[in-house]
Image (tube, rainbow, N blue to C red; front, side):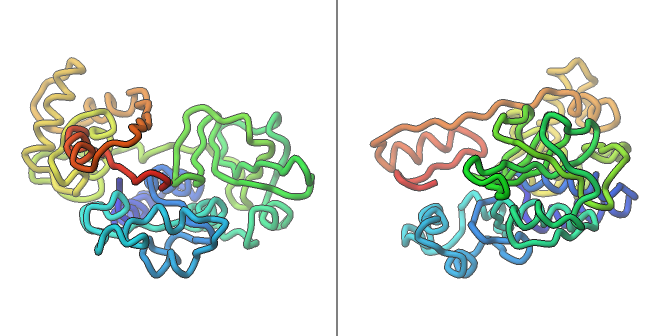
Length: 307
């Protein structure tokens, strides 16, 4: 999982590369995968801290509290939390806070404090319609209509063709669009022009390299089951990352020199997304859970009843 600082570094690089606002918004959404859901939260206005969770707490959205071990008194610090990667903060969102944050990085600020207000404010959009008329190759905001009130929207996210990113149980990416989405809208200023999911030209990087593209490489490798060391995506191309690159290259018929150049980037870009699963083991003692979780890179555990 990327930290907020890492995502902001990526955004700065995309802006410097001259990507369109739609491309930056979509890339930002993908870079935030795994960040937490907190009802009422607006991203960079609400870092994932105890203070934010207490400010946003509502009893009808109890996971604001129960998803956080420090809030629940189970831990004294955020160290080791999945939302505190390598000792750095991430941001928290609800659904409309997530889309607002991503679009702001691309230069568009939606009017409205909720997804219904956003949808019903005509100045927010250049075009909109029902899901059966959704345009291809175009970044859109997706909406789910309340079946009991045709003027009300229940949920919002971002869509590109069949792919979606939304914040409901945290920020999640889906390759196939769910049938729940009923409407789409193109943010004003983002109409026309395609969306590339990552910058076209990536630099050749190797052991000793640092920065945003190292983080991108490490994230891609980790998602495909390659071990980049105990610190994960830490922006440093060290011996563990080099070994992971060599293993990936061997597995895909490439020269295993440990250098990530155009052919290795291309192989990573054309790999199918990994399907992820949640495994629930009830009544497992803590010592067994801790031993089990050490066997799986990027895994975490929650107490019974937590989100």
